[in-house]
Image (cartoon, rainbow, N blue to C red):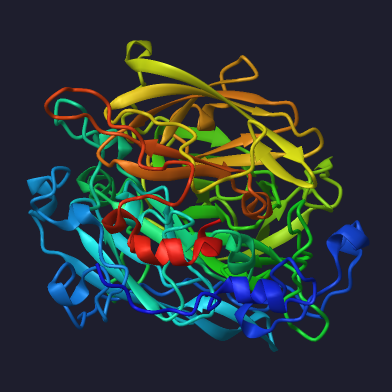
Length: 602
């Protein structure tokens, strides 16, 4: 297979050489200035920050990503691996002849989108123009709105001088499209991300509709640079529905998601929580030597610092996303009112759970119903964070005396007559537990620290190694243990949901007891989880979602292996501990290029 010539150092590796700190990524594609080192400052809350007045800017809601007419058809000869237009090609599962491609994936027309990594100027603080990074130049990026059963291709362009990898967090996707940290979209190139938008299929061919997602998000996942890229703005929402959830909306149990203009409806509100850190000149403060985790002192929601939101006297659905790198939020309403949590991570719960507080580590989502109907017009209440945290290691604990106000809700209008009808007893999505009889293997993973960086089972992440080789259509038990002392780790596992059966030997809190894609490991915590591996074979990863820990090698690779159709024996992993030997069509990168540029994949 012919390959297009590329300079070996046209990448973040060139930044490593150019950087003022020698061996670490300094400022990124925008030559952003380094700020004060958090390791030197200790308490980030004491660092200076730009002056601003909170709650003067309305909460923005990211616009929807619109369908696009692509220049050449996905999977066509003009858009295959090594083509001029789409050098990284498309997932081999896109081909109807592929053994994993199910005819159901083609029941509905393919929807196509286009997205570009871009440098942009963004106002995290009103009036302060900050060089940032955004998908299509937006922070947060545009929202994907998809329906289960509607396949889609996102053609992603990367003009930046970094390797990039788009990860749909919580998605059930082919390995090529999953956002594997080394399945890059290289500088100046394009990749077609194929999402059949299917639910997992069981071994008997039946569809597991309990796995239908609702609130997902996406972000960059490039190897070694995820923290830098997400801190600079490369993240966004992905909202899904299926006929079951659409029926809940049609019955007025849940509010509408889609407005008449095709944008997001007003009573369903995605909120990405980010703590940002700016230098006094307005540039993003970034410390490449901070391995504990980046903490900011500006509390932003949907990319703006401490916004307000006008609300009617009715129920609202808030999709809360922990979009920070290291901060762990403990959220409450300032009037201590209860909320109905209806979803955890990507999935609806079996029924609502009444809560007054929500713990939101990095990467996690909480889908909640907040009822403003009993508040008088003119009331003002706040979404608050009461978790005190001054560095990236872990929080100091709950501090109710000094809450951090994130969003001001300004209540207005009269009583609403057509409010949604959801209550604490409303059935939502049925949950299917993984029975003990399905478990075929148990694996232990201990998260630790070594040489100032991060390890799992005593090893740094290697893209050349398969650390686990589960068999497709099987289920396993994993024991995840935090053995790193004074640090906490939110663990994210790609490909499918997992079910937490025990936390330190007991059942987890109710909202975490069903499906998760992030399991938070506090100090000296062991989580026992169960997970299925279905539909797609190939390499996937799991890692700490404190992105600085992930970049500093707290990540493992598992490769889902198929069976030989004749002998029934399990295929061995493609990774061979010597070089990045993933099949070219799966990685979207030719072997000749990988062998010529091993430093990019190290």
